[in-house]
Image 1 (cartoon, rainbow, N blue to C red):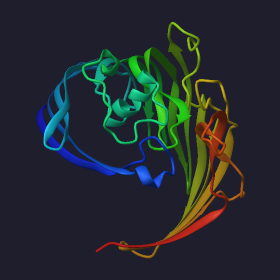
Image 2 (cartoon, rainbow, N blue to C red):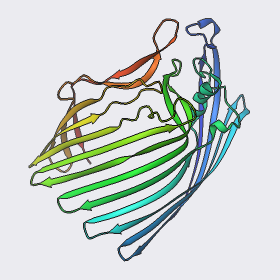
Image 3 (cartoon, rainbow, N blue to C red):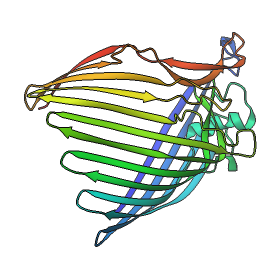
Length: 346
């Protein structure tokens, strides 16, 4: 398989800058700048079947050009050239099961937000970069992320059972990791470029069908570490829960399908200063009635147990002078809520 893809993108950014002074309406000034991004990529994929083996390789070549412009004057530009290869082997043990392994190397350019927010981390600019005009030109701080990913998996499929399992190890150079610190002007969490991070874990999903019942699950266990020359060495990456799982079942009777599922999210670090959130568990349910091929009625009841839970957002400022207090900040999860849907297909 061969493919060619090209994109061109233009976006105008505008707003008001309080010149670093909050709620000072006298010193408001307008700002306006335009971002351009062009992307050209080619993709090559080759698969060869040899007895019970499937040999495959993917190669992507990608060129990215990004620039900003103010008052019709080019402000800054970046160029990236990426070559992203992948290779693997799949072994068909029998008609129902197979093993596979793969290794891939992928590069990704920093986003506009990475660049703008990165200025804060690099130059210690208080209250961020609200007017979008401070950039770092040609700085190695904004080199691309480089990901090496190794995976080993097993798949089983039969008439009544489907199981997918996978273990993986990822090494990422120059990852833009969220520090958890919330910039009060933009609402973004400030990022920091980490020289090397590791993520490794186990993931699985599957379902079992028995008469009118179907049981399903997803499972993800991950460990992550930052590799640095400072106090952050060997700390876990913020906003990466170690354990995520969901389990549920459905029951089908004539035109009705009802289901119940539960989701558990373990505790996680909210910032690089070791503030940690609590884990939470919620249950959701649904009832579908399919009148005919074109009309379906659905009822969803989420958080059936009316559980109070809080989703970590980061750490921020909590006094009238906008002084950083290392205070944990959360979103409140929705209590019991419901929705009714009516779907008609022409």
